[in-house]
Length: 530
Ligand SMILES: NC(=O)c1ccc[n+]([C@@H]2O[C@H](COP(=O)([O-])OP(=O)(O)OC[C@H]3O[C@@H](n4cnc5c(N)ncnc54)[C@H](O)[C@@H]3O)[C@@H](O)[C@H]2O)c1
Ligand SMILES: O=C(O)CC[C@@H](O)C(=O)O
Image (cartoon, rainbow, N blue to C red; front, side):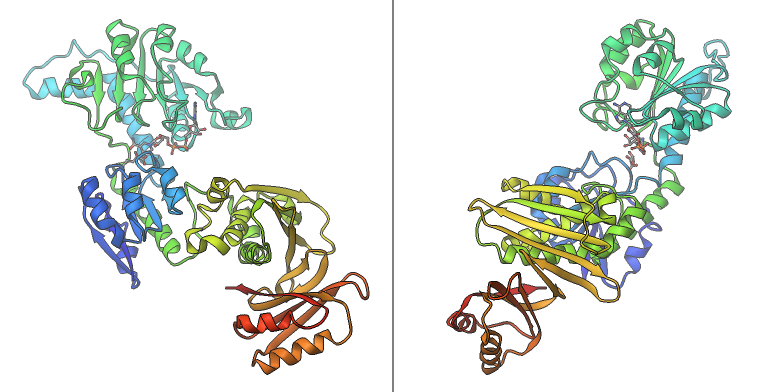
């Protein structure tokens, strides 16, 4: 039975499928301190959070059973991603479920800002009928600058068009084509600062975006600009903004997010007549909360049940069409890695993976993670998974190198894994999926072979002399080791050769020791593929 801890308020309806899963127990315990979480997290396989719980390295370290942290929302800045990756814990989010809701909140803020709605409301309900102080501005014919044209920024731009606004958009990934499709003029940050009447930010908070709007930008800003931040506190320098408002550069600001949340009681935004605020409500609608909870619950179930999943933040994102091509090779890749690692006797400094055929045309990073997992699991066992395999290799000074080739030796796809060691030992294995036959190892070092990679194998190196195969068969038979299949590989008659036997059960060490006593037989080693 898997145990899932929900540590922030998350829609019950959204997590219904977790609650109903017969193999999952859901525990809801919100508002816990870091110490309290550290004390209990060890019992849980998954942790579900929104933005309140800070998932620190201490919590992740104490979570020795944790397989996944699910963030019901977009931003994962409350989760220590590096620590999760190091520990092989998948972090997933729900990037699509709150896009429209947050876009609509941005619009609500922009209109409230243009028409002083919160200030006018407060005055009216206090009994003062003041129609003079709140002269607003129209949105029509105004220029809106959008910094960050991802999911939310693009939706804001679409709606701003309907309001008759001209839109300047900046995003490092925004192309001319896409800008044109969205009806946005491709701009620089500087264009936006100097020309926009309204500016809204929709980037993540990164070292590059922290304080991207600060004193130098306010100094050249178009006078009278109105600024909205429904993305992350810290993208706009709060203290520099207060100065710019007080100096008359900025006409007003609407903030849903703060550098520190909640802000201190004496934060200058909280009683400024030209600033309106909401308490990080961008994603707070019935619909969005259900959407993100459903998305994240679905993925948590997949991860716990070892099924394919999406939206992992600490894994490279892979398009569905590419994933469809890679997925059939995951198991084979891991086994190739495991096989070649078991026959390598010295410290590895490089894992070289070569993809030939159709696989050479797609992004294979995810498949490489499986191969590296297979290699490292010989020594690291269950501590390695596809989340941390590359990290663990790097932390042991093992380079992971990918290359792409066209030469498939007649196969549709061919994966070749080479392990290079400090002692100049180089071991190589190649595998493919054969139509109708499934996974196959087709090359071992320099020998062409045909082996189904599963179960117990014995790899024997010997000189190609008559009678050896018979000797081996007799000795295994005597020791009650049944041979399921046998492959012999050699380059030249009478030269170096290998024999790979697939056997029905584990081979006792003594039997391997006896095998090497056979004349002309050099080494005998067991390889186990789970
Ligand atoms: N207020 C809320 O409750 C709430 C809700 C949802 C999302 N958010 C926040 O809104 C922001 C946007 O979310 P999204 O779903 O649109 O994300 P997204 O990933 O779809 O878009 C972010 C965009 O920012 C761009 N970007 C990165 N660095 C940039 C830079 N230096 N200059 C300009 N653009 C840059 C990226 O290229 C990307 O296109 C995130 O910070 C997210 O955490 C807040
Ligand atoms: O959980 C929330 O309400 C915040 C959501 C939002 O900031 C996000 O990044 O998805």
